[in-house]
Image (cartoon, rainbow, N blue to C red):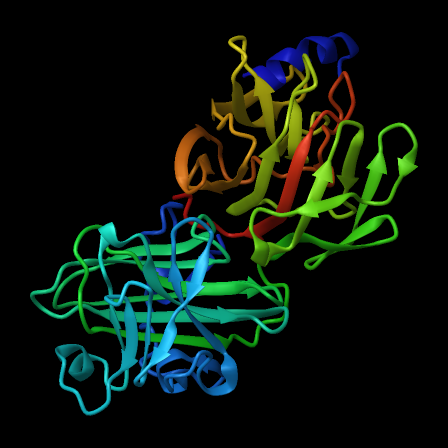
Length: 432
């Protein structure tokens, strides 16, 4: 464990489930494949905010302009589909979205009034998708029902927030069957929730789709504990949509104005641009007595020689617990990412896991999920490492720091790169 191993020697000298899934998506394993005990609604609930099928009218935004119809190009770029004869059609004409009306595909009898989606297939380079943008900070439920006609190819269904890496659910819709899933989330104003159809092989015609967005009535935030978008700064602080502001600091001089730069993709806006000695300090202690999800976008520029660069940490060397996510340079000169927690502060022991980090200085999505006795690390939606930890192991008495360690010796801020869209939730999102 390099992050801890390099630093613990110096320290020793001084002695130092609430699931985000609802209905058919209750998740206890962190893999997004849980099952629930309540049926997904067959119509948009009384608190309906948007109904994909009812709102579809062949225009670019649908009734109320709640929707966007996009070809998901699988690379954090989306191209608007074109209204054409009551449909919306992609650059690949086999990607199209219409509606059950005067037609008799089997999907229409299974899901009356549904949308009809056709997919081009895995070799196309783009997938048809529906996007709903949240207008305010609010807890919402996203309810999805998908029916693939008998005889068609199975279809992968992806429900995600802002980019494919930030996955809320991935499932396979089998021919002749109806896939159902509901997910509850604390949505931030401007969050885009996309339902994409990404067939693993062949495309299919006339897939029946219902997609409802409804308010839950729960007070915001319900599961969100931390949400930093870095879209704008006020003085020396940036807003935390789910708690107290974070203060931008210089390790030597104190509070300073934040430095912002371009984020991982246009829709996310600005990101924190962090250089050594600069970091952000929070004011709230995170509640991590049960399942938690910690995620953020990271761009690593370069290492400070001999030092690890922490992206976010509240690791607690006084009481034990906390979570550190950092990058370090291996003896071979390549970068690794490591997740770690202090398991015993008295003798400074740690649980940890590490994995190679892409050495390309580009943006990557990091998600750490603690559930079912495991802390799992995913990079860009792929699980790369894990370690065992009982429930509550990641609780901490420290508030989070971004861009520096907490009480390590030597103390300092050694991260050099970009960080964006930092979020911590109560509950376990799928790690992959």
